[in-house]
Image (cartoon, rainbow, N blue to C red; front, side, top):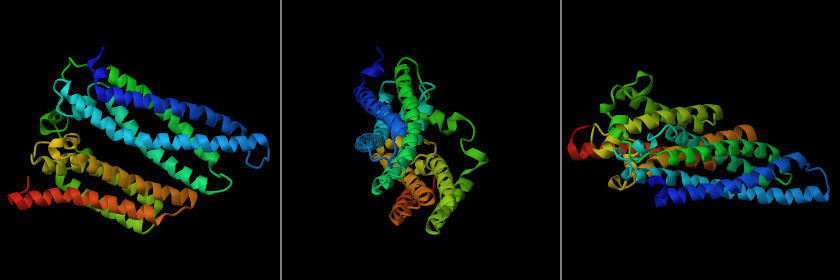
Length: 322
C-alpha cells in the first residue's frame, strides 16, 4: 500500500471527507425530491411533511458545510506534514505538485469554500422568512455545489493515491524562488509596481465598501485577493522568513514561523469572502449588512497591517530592507 495512505493525517482527512460526502449525497437525493414536489401554497399533508424534511435537510447541509470550512486548513496541514515522506519536498508546495491533481484540487477547494459561504448566508436569510422564499433557489445552488463537491471528492482520492514516495519533487525554492527561473509575477510586474497595486487596491476595496458600491467592491476585492497573494509570496513573505530568496506561500504555515501563515491567509480569504458576501446579499437579496462590511474591513485591514508590520519590524531591527 502507498505509504501516504498510512499517514494518520491522511486517514483522518479521507475518512472525514467520505463521511461528509455521504451525508451530502443523502441531502442531494432529498433535495431533488423537494424540488420536484415543493408547493408552499398547498395546504396538504404531503406539503407539511416536505417542510419538515426541508428543515432537516438544510440543517444537515448547514453543519456539513461548516465542517468543510474547517477541513480546508486541515487539508493544508496534512499536505504540509507529508513533506517528511516525499523526497525533495521541504513544505506543502512540493507535495501539492507531487502529481497533476494537487493544484486543481486546492483551487477547487477554495472555490467551494466561497460558494458554500454564500449558500450559508442565503440559507440564513431564507430561514428568517415564514414562507421560505429562497428554498428552490438555494436548493439549485446546493445541487451546483454538490456537483463541485463530487469532483473534489474524486480529486481527493486521485491525489492521495497517486503521490509517489519514491519520486523526488521540486522544493519551494525551485517552484517559487529565484532558482525557478524567470519572473513569477503576473502581467510583467516588478516588486515596486506590485506593492503600489497592493496598497491602491486595498484603498479601493475600503472606498467601495464604505460607498456601498456592491459590484465594484466584488471586483476590487477579487483583484486585491490575487495581487495580495503575489505580494505575500514575492515580497512580504521574504520578511517573514528574513531571507530575500525564500519565496513560498507554504513554509509560513510551519511551526518555525509560529504558524503565522494560517492567520495571514485566513485574514485575506475571510476578508475577501465577507466583502463579496455582503455585496451579494445586498444586490440580490436586498439584505444590507453593516456588520459584515465592518468585519470584512477589519479583517482586510489586519491583513495589510500584519504584512506591513513584518517589513517595519525587520527595518527597525536591521536598519535595511531586504
